[in-house]
Image 1 (tube, one colour):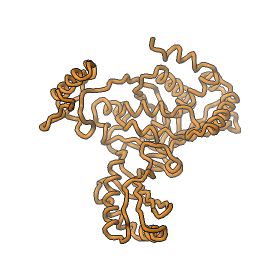
Image 2 (spheres, rainbow, N blue to C red; image 1 turned 90 degrees about the vertical axis):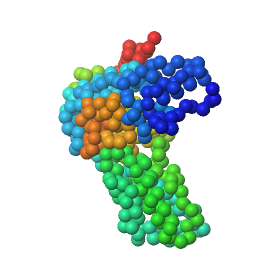
Image 3 (cartoon, rainbow, N blue to C red; image 1 turned 135 degrees about the vertical axis):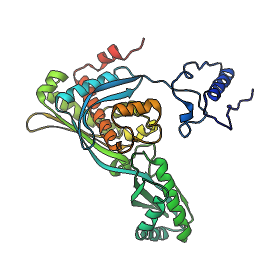
Image 4 (cartoon, rainbow, N blue to C red; image 1 turned 180 degrees about the vertical axis):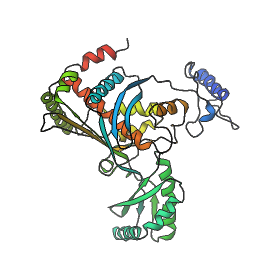
Length: 388
């Protein structure tokens, strides 16, 4: 048998073709894929989601809650599905949610919403690139029309400009409805840039993306200017409640926060929190998000203080939270069920999901912080997190 992976030119998304590929892999490698091939999903639903389909990765899903959210879009109590193989993770988030529920819940606010594509245009000199930048500002309405002609829901908000050498970097900012929107804005920006290249003289060439949108990477520009949803989650926990449920004095927790800030500063981290990626990765996998977007979505800024009344104020700002409730993997059966569990499947729900995600992150940050201060971190992992 050749080393070429089997495909069907008529219909590559059937159980029979998937089984043929598994047989091929067994012959080529000696591996058995019995569990990979056992699943409830219909391969016919997968065009646009996967190529060379052989089966499903079955990851355990746990649920934490109730999570009480006092949001602009998410209001009430939610049970949050988390797909993970890390013991103690669900238990930790559940503990944080219990504490926050007793304190009155998490207040969430969506501050901004933007998805980018960032082309670059090259000119013979910096002065010509400068003139081009002025032309872009003067012709924004026409550029916007060209971009939006490719999409039903995408809207071009504005175009940021950055200059270096003889290059003008343009950062196209869009709103994308309930989709994450990376492909949408790529198509829209290409249409706009192709038109620009046709009508503006002197362009040596352009690149549709030059790393200024920073797909799948954290960056200062996205931390400051937003990519996806910019969400703040905040809560005030009474000192007595921290003592009772968290087994921690407020002064001890605040001191640990200051030490963590210093340690993160010295290490050069992009996130002064503890483990936002844990919540987001588990929630992303459960709800059909692009898991690689955790790379930028997990950037976060924590702020804490002891209030004049002696309670503990805690907030986390997530500047690049990329989530969707429509399109991509959100419509697959398991992922759809998890979104429906949150009341977040379909159109008009993306900001609600963003608030639930941010609130979940906050609960996990507090829970881990309390475990560290109360010296329960290792013991809890020993109890729940070791699969012997």
